[in-house]
Length: 201
Image 1: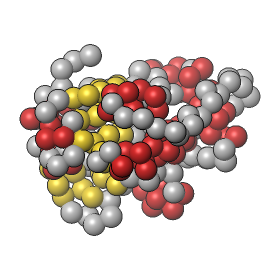
Image 2: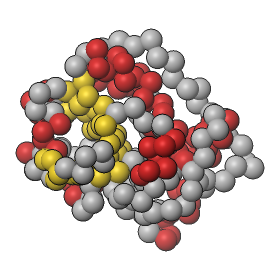
Image 3: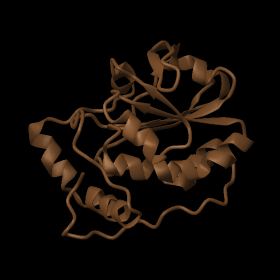
Image 4: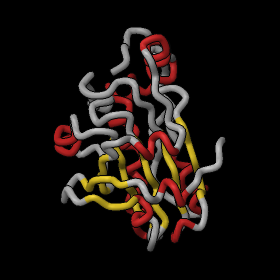
């Protein structure tokens, strides 16, 4: 995995989804450690399930002075995402997608998107999301991938840097708490079994 230049990434401006205020990303880790979850898009069914999954850690993160922050690459689908209550942390928009570029979150193209979207990892998560009543849509930028970065307080170091290879890739809860050196009683969702009848959303 490429080394993350926190000084560069920290200068990227993001918009607070609640207030509309623009902030530098480094402000998010200035006074506390932070888990930054980068969504592919707000309408993505897999992203919604993953957001609900990572949100299981919210209380434990807060108890250990760790912020939980979600970042989307565009505003499309934001209200529906918020109304659905999929994510318990703060939400920001990276309208220029600069942090996505700086953190190595790739973009698909017409040739690579379909095989990735129909892969077993995606079908597995879609099956789980469907079972939990989490739906999605095809609105927004379908080509952007996402990931996660966990930064120590003050930007001292990167504790975890995860880049999606498949749209169905995500960081297990156990890896998040391990990176932070904390514990949790949250129960991770069972890794879903593939169902060939499901299609990706």
